[in-house]
Image (cartoon, rainbow, N blue to C red; front, side):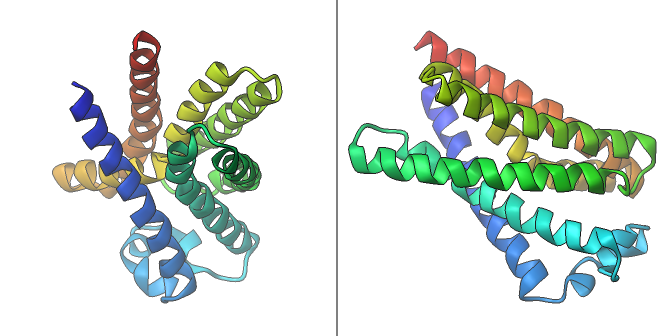
Length: 210
């Protein structure tokens, strides 16, 4: 069973790194409108990148979320003994918390304009709040020097961070299976959030029992 978790973790971290880099390239190197034309045609006006408040909130959200996604795997690798490792871990941890605080608040604002109606807006709002809360608790417990609880809440925090990855997987699977983009989009956000948190709890319980 251990090798299954290791393979899954490796796949997740690799996917996170690819997504983080791809998002930055897609929006800051390539033409974001051309890259999002398919979902723009489905009604996602936000990705037309017009000069409206949401454009700047979206850019801020993408940059800070990508930073958090990329930091996560490094943090778990640095979570070992050693003064230098610990120093880097702390510095990156602060950057991770700041990035999520900014991205999460931007996400709350963007959730009000989410495509897919009320359930979609509620889903993105719930994801942003979950992101902020889990990350705050991870930060709170390390400030209390409670390392076990800090680690557990960091697993939950990064599980929510990785909703950006699983959301895209679920939306493609459901959308293409049902041939309904809207249903896939709305269902994906809830499956990404709840599914990731369930897997995080399974991982946490496994770590407790070791």
